[in-house]
Image 1: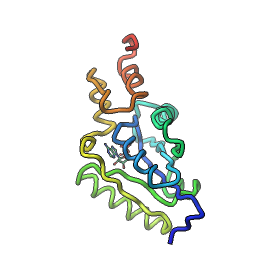
Image 2 (image 1 turned 180 degrees about the vertical axis):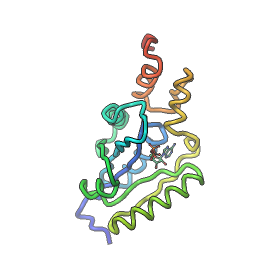
Image 3 (image 1 turned 30 degrees about the vertical axis):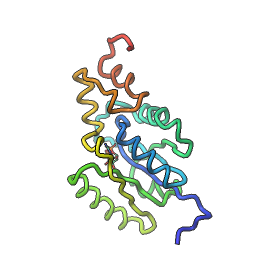
Length: 170
Ligand code: ADP
């Protein structure tokens, strides 16, 4: 049985380059279930990000300002190590489409092998966000398309500024 004297801390790892409304929906729903939710930005030297880790954390903080039990952090290395260090016993992952499932199941099995105490919990995306990814948002923004229905409010101006630095602010 869960030890309810101890708060249940969930870790939601990802690139969040940048946070989208799909991510935010998962964070809001996780924060109704768990006592604390840590949104963990992975430092991944293999990827060329649009936003630095610090910028991504700042955008997550601004986008989750209405959720006091949510905190944005960064980590490198194994996700389960980060979870151990932060006292998290749950890993949150979002599932959009069937093709996410194969990779996510493999990751969940890997993490279970690495740490018996940590459970992976999958939250199914809302239908309206099932197509949405950070890569898609960046592609639209680079072509000057509107992203206001895809990302939280604080991200809109930042991404437009990053893709078109010479445009005057809206
Ligand atoms: P990664 O680099 O691990 O793919 P992302 O930042 O893209 O990191 O995503 C982090 C987590 O958020 C993953 O579990 C991913 O499936 C989930 N996620 C991404 N986009 C959405 C969305 N539109 N709806 C629900 N979950 C999502």
